[in-house]
Length: 141
Image (cartoon, helix red, strand yellow):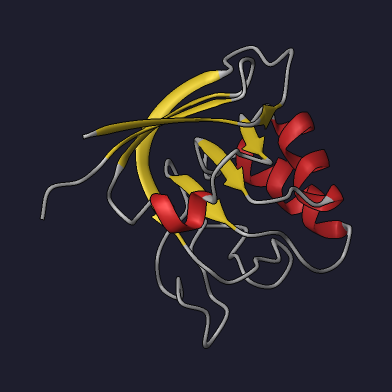
């Protein structure tokens, strides 16, 4: 089953359309301290993504938290090839938004439907940040 939802996305990126496997958390993320900057692995103890790697995933989370240095961490992850392919948020925060813009990471937020209630780990997701569209192909269990 394919679901398409519309929101607001970043425009002007070199590659605004990407697809990949969803990695979803209901918890906020701080790129400074929660993510190992040398591997892309979530290292925050107690976080529901602890031990998982964001590299090459479509990272779906509510919002970012923490220091503005988190933008630099996200940019550095992108420069090292360790960043997510795209980010989907309920409501983007400034730290994540700035990191995505400079790191050339497609980002869509403010979707017509709550992405955290629709997208599940392992779903195939297409993100088109230019058009603000997210397409979800539900994983069959």
